Image 1: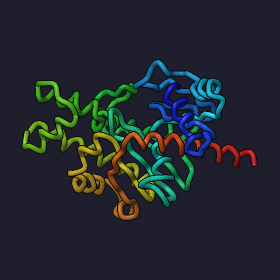
Image 2: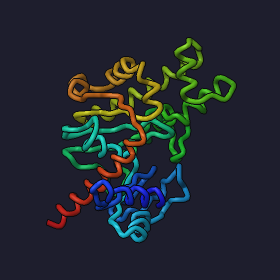
Image 3: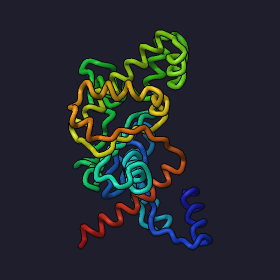
Image 4: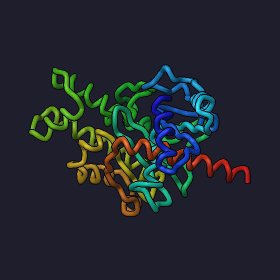
Length: 267
């Protein structure tokens, strides 16, 4: 709340006025009410919290809440690597794995707010257990958390996800095998997106994506092994860098999107 109030106070001296607040949070969200869902795995204390109503009531401004990757996708569509695209998918590879899907300018949320949960696409039916209760989810192979866990287990010492990539680049065989598995799993997950949605742009972002940047040709080849050639040719894939401004732009884009969407629904 304090951060939002500070940003709001900085607007008038710049000749601006805050019109609304956009907030992105991990997990599922009922975007119509701004209530956080039960699948708030990384912030369990926020499960079922009516965050939009709480923020709006305190700050006397319209507030909109959605999944953080949905907000990032809107930010890239309006201000970043997705500008001018009719459709895009942003796959965030960080502590967890999330997706933001925009088709024909509309955010795909699904009936219950689960649209874009691409980290839980199963790629190995009998694979690693996932925090969602399933097995073999994409997340369990390509998230920073799971890469670090697998690296620590197989290397016999604690290691971070970036550490696994550095060791692999230096020629460490076990780390290299883990990275090969990451690329294979990611390629399969990307093929699901390319074949199933064929978006104009497919953006990969987050800490793991940054570590994978030197390996981009291998990622493309892994995706191409499973995807239609025509779908690959018409989906532009790119690894993009995020910073603190990305989240701010995402929040602003979410507020802008929701204001116009709701005005259109009333028209």
